[in-house]
Length: 320
Image (cartoon, rainbow, N blue to C red):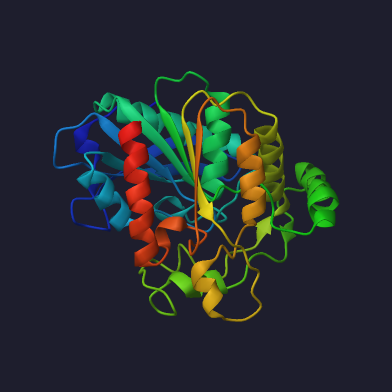
């Protein structure tokens, strides 16, 4: 496991005080593996920090939220997971994973670095697939001294598919994936989510469309199996021994063409599934925020809604 060395950091692509360092990880079935830790330190001396884990077809680019955290006196860190964003290598298939526990190595390493850098109160924060990974990790690491709260942004607790596909199709693909993990699955979410958030289309955000394309690369059966098994494990998993916050939209839609509702809904996951599974988690302390108008990534919602959300998050952070 790596130890912290201030000289390991270099300027990040975001500039403006953001830094990054490469985390060398164990080789896997595709060969060499790395992850990338990004940080921005608060201008005030603090022992508080947040570690962000992005979702599928994603990477860290959320400078606004990082700067907001720093203004609250919280050091901000993020991981570009293996095979995503800053961490993808030329021999790797983007997003390829066969067990979500593979990501525990970079979480262990990153959280240990945060601790070695003097952070004593750490929020583990995951969006979508990152929310599933974070929950799975928290259940597998009860009473850890490396993180102290769990913050989930539209966690990917169930596939947004009809009942027959969720109950029969996904488990079947998951079983096949154990022997044929590289077999590709057609389908996936539409281009409209990307259009709703990227500046080149109908959105306000600028990010790398190679690392976060409007149309995600096809997933393989191994990926579907990894997600399915983690979702099952989370629903019956160990107690989450830290305070939990879950934020998600009040509305889901599955658009076939562009409409104004896309700017005010979760077009990736079913919010009823998020609510049902979140409320059923074995957790000592849980708090939920739903706001009308939130997008799938709640921190990419319209400015008016974001400001409402920041006020609510500020209250929760002060309580923590």
